[in-house]
Amino acid sequence: MIAVDKEDVDLLDRTAVQGLADWIERDHGRVDGVVHLVGGWRGAGSFAETSLDDWDLLHDLLIRTLQNVSLAFEPLLRDSDNGRFVIVSAKAAERPSAGGAAYAAAKAAAEAWTLSLADALSGTGSAATILVVKALVNDAMRAEKPDAKFAGFTDVHDLAAAIGGLYDRPAAEVNGTRLDLTA
Image (cartoon, rainbow, N blue to C red):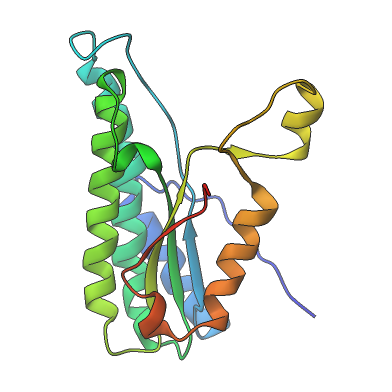
């Protein structure tokens, strides 16, 4: 039987995130997985039209939340025999478009942060991994737009299977890797 607890925590509040990590450790004794799937997208018609307000928003959503979560949970993952920390990134981080500069830069920064976490977890039973998607699609989106192709999108079920599959491989094999789910 799996017990699930639900807590609402502002991931932009470092103290609140640390409190969540402390609570989980107290009540459950350990953490075996953290999936950072916090997103948002902003873009512009051209590079010159990029709004730095968009950068500020994306910095908070994609980077600051990641920093707060990873800093709070790294000690718990370090102590796990088979822990996994996963971020969901985007193809845009490796091949940015002119109008997507702020988004791509934020995703690239999130990836760099995650690779630093991977370095911190080296030699432990845990790993930090980057999963790359173009975008996610689910059954409700397909039902809403039955004629849409969703080319290159990753089904949420495939994303879940990829996350679960990380536990089937040794930590050293997946730590610091960037796995492309768009193919």
